[in-house]
Image (tube, rainbow over all chains, first blue to last red; front, side, top):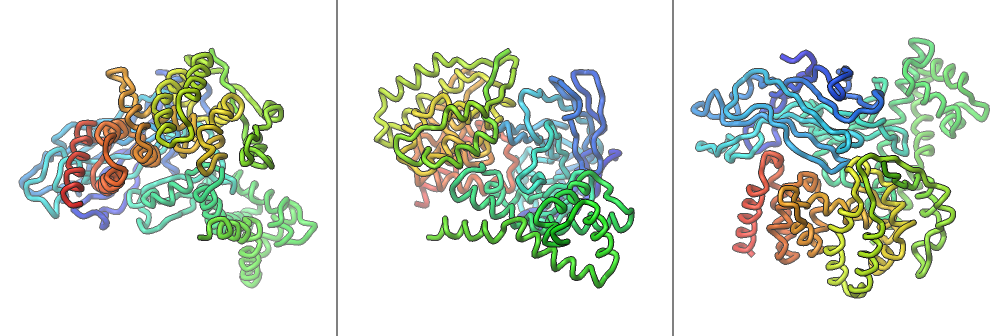
Length: 334
Length: 238
């Protein structure tokens, strides 16, 4: 069992055949640059941050993929173990238009742990690179359904890791979007968006199975239906994200007396310097007033109710949601 | 070491807020102002051959009748490999949107305007990013060629075929499977002479298959074989 893995749901109901979701446990033990310096991944975020290590040409990432015992459910009894499948890691570098497979184990494969070593050339990468483990059939299945009938079909998956090559770029609402297959990451597969704000690096996760939404969110910041829809979606997501961020920041302040993470200080600064602050706490708002007011209102249930109501109003104004919606309707009405 | 010019986001904003360009006919980008929004990257193992690129673009604009859609498509097919060869930069650099904004706005604005003036979203052809591969025109040509260039055989046959069919190039460059080069090449090689209606039907069925098939585990020949079977099915049921 790798040292740094999470459990995940064991079945993907959306697949038309037996599929072992979460059967593959992908762990990263470390990484090194140009055969020299060694770094550690961020196990909480399942990210491998490479942007604070100066100049480097190649990075080598080491880890392992463990095939769990639920793999037996996705093959008929007479097919194994060992099973007619290959174990691979999909490497997807979106910004540099690069997708390929790293072979981890040739067929046939059995339950157990397999080492992975992947060397990547920096000149081929920018932004984030996502690595996802998959088990793929290499022969047709004579029994057919409910087992995956054809070679090339994926029969098991696991949680991905993200290599962060460059400093994360912030979107206009201040937080990066990250794209994941929710069914592979232990989140409700029907959900579209999930925010992770209890960590030092808050981000919005988007379920990449919603291809149309992902295409819109990844469109350019120019004109036309998709960029305008993108502005609208970001404003929409931003409303719920900001409410969460303010409440979480206030909770931390109520408990500890001050913000804990850099992003929480950023939230307080943003409130104190924008219409969020004036709407919530009046014209003379500053950093100290925001800290004091948040602590006071979140600690008192009667004031908390009022704060949530005020917050919903303030964030909508701040995000310009109504304005974006009106513009979108005007531009794209049939 | 080669100096790569990049237009900063502030330059992009300048164009977006411009009251004439590119919407009005015969308008030009605010070149002098944009010069103040440039930054540079020093890149090893990169080279931009402006002489050859200028010559190729000028020749194309003289030879092809840009008033005709079919001719514009043929020009793209002709230019895409040349753009890829002349702008010899690693993907890490090609992924910087500002490089393409510099090239379209400050180097080749007349070419972009001539190519796209009869279509909507002309501004997108100057300002789009590599995330929308059909938007910024030079990025579209470069990435389309990059994804379909045959590295083993050292030729651009699939690139020519991809760009020769508007429906095909739009579909491939708008898909997420484009990032898997064997798939992009297989599409160009297998569907280049199909009708637009067939391309749409085949591509839709292919996309549906990706919900169960692991694309990256398939070779180019396997993907071509799959596309051929889908085509047979589409033709037999239409």
